Image (cartoon, rainbow, N blue to C red; front, side):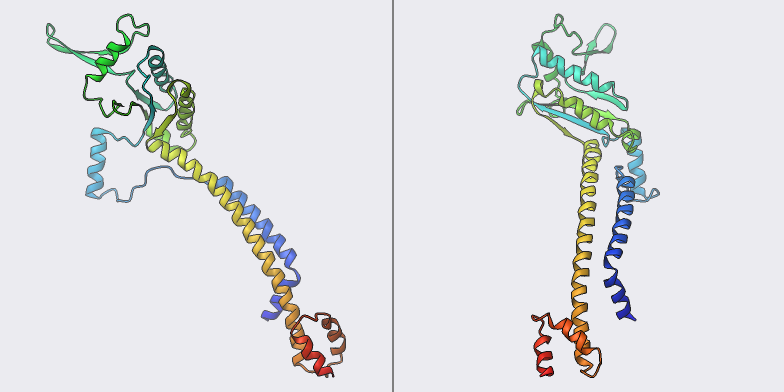
Length: 287
């Protein structure tokens, strides 16, 4: 039975390989078009777990930074009138993108003064006059840098690194159709490289969207190479099996003896394979 199955496969190997190729292309196309990567943060604990419940309460009270995208530049010329206005301009352009909740940078900070007469604190924007008539760029820098809260959070004096922190709606990040807002933000920020130098990105939104997109692209390449490898191996082993099938036929004739009336015809056909190890034995037997 199995010899018949093997013979059928070897005789029709090209037809079978064609069917396998069609099926592979069909399912490969389906996998490529339906392939999706879930970029949501995984939750390994059940909802009724005490630790998970405490974590949900903490997020409800203090929020979370899993949706914060960070844009960083390293330059010692940020506090010039032209560059500082460009830094502010970048923040406001990003804020106009749908899905962005807030933008925080050195150019968008608020200051607080104590009004003794009114017995209250007054909040004002540190940098609002783009003409620098009320405050010079040096005064703006001094007012920002004297507040220790932002040191190490929005800027680093030692390395001249400044950050722009972008809060993105979690619902937008969880939706694959809308998560392209991260790519739009990064594309916009890259246009300002001529003012600040190389722009760097960090944060979970960058990892969840940009890296996930890169993984999907690499998976397409993997599926293509895998399909090609499978077809190549099927053809190789099919061809190898066909050669072995001819050798096994030669052995069967030899073992049955020489009484068969069809032996001479088969022997003459196989005798051309002079390199085969059975050929000398057949010649010796005939002699």
